[in-house]
Length: 261
Image (cartoon, rainbow, N blue to C red; front, side, top):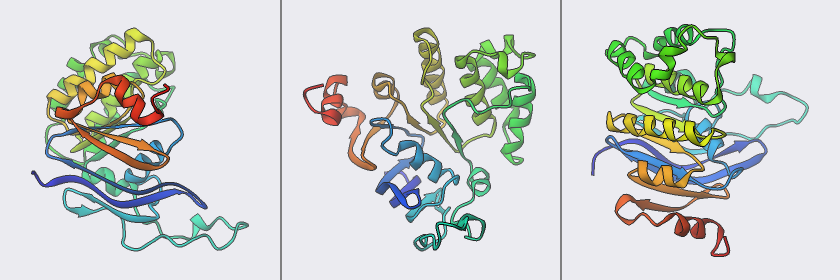
């Protein structure tokens, strides 16, 4: 097996004092595409935010390309509910270090600058590449993947549809030249037509050999896209399934929710 690109070992975290996910073990190697599927509200996004450095892990290890991204040791509990302990507690992981390493997280919700144009946002996005070679080629790839954005190049973000904003969000992630691209619910809330269009674009990203970690509620989209699927329930990984043994849609739902679904 290839060396791990991303390895999570015994990772736990949440929003103190509430534990959200526990003892998560997950590995991505080479140019794999990995899917994470489970019920809403069970900790998938909190896990991704922790890996991306937006939240501190409580315990465990985040290794990326052989480099440990979080500091060693468990996070100590807050000592007072009346004090904003985050102002004084030293961070165990920093988002800027994660980005510099090449791990790029595209959050759900199209969090973009509403008064900027598509072109302006994408011009800023490539600065996150930190001098790595290939920005020009990736810009051409983005134009090919999302021809709709060329038509809206001078449009402000706030005038775009939800699907178009999601395309901009993914394009921003790609222009950072990711060594691993994490997509959190990329098809959430889109019309069937735009969902299909975006799913096809993400499949083409997969064909460029950019490693992917994708969370989505569309299980058919995930099973068609990924090499391995992790099932996630109540804050823990409950199963790992490879492409050769991928169950049907109904079987996956039965594994997650019981045969009565």
